[in-house]
Length: 334
Image (cartoon, rainbow, N blue to C red; front, side, top):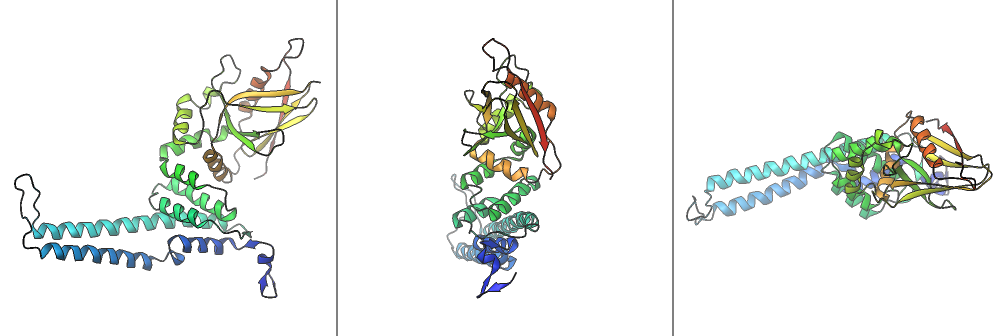
């Protein structure tokens, strides 16, 4: 890009180089270019501190040397061994944490390589600090993949993921993450109000007896309760979603890599509702992280057919006849 009066064109457009911005965030979070030299220096300083304590113990001639009268007594030799193990443990932890961080950074870098330019809006320093504190202890490759994609998403669009979401993800086990992966293909998105200023992310509820919607074949109560417990989904039995569809008009629901157009073929306004398990803010943000990487996957159209058919059961015209809805699925090209 050309320069103008000392400014890069990307600066004029409010854009930034993705990998350059990532390195700046890393520098704020764990030091310049996360150099291992810095980690070794910090480890050496801590080891020296432990060594000084060791010498102080050894020079104490009154140090107990055995177990007497219920008191633990440590010999000088035992103290040396203890200090050495403490040093080794500290160094091992530092190395492992550094490996975890660098694995996540590599995933974020791979995600950002294909981005030509992104917003130059800075990422919050509090967010950066929390992110690297949390991710240092993430060893699972599956969880590192999620954290790496989340970092790339925040670099690209600062403010996309709250610190609260980071905390939810930090507490999530690999098993709970897999539960979310299992229900992921069945999550639907619809306008949360008539102005479409916000959107509801949801799973159709299992609770209504007699429905044509057999969602038990897609996910279970236990899965919903577990995801509620971790903070991704609300299992509130009173929650529902609603769509107002004008006569001979359509409303859109988003599904996995697809848009679902639901058409009202009657001459009456339909307010289509269905009990639902709504995703929390953390659930929505995690969905958006994962959705970007589910290329090629398509929503199960039998599942959508059952869902739309179950909406029909709520709508009777003035003669008591079921109001019909039709739906068409448009797959996005990803």
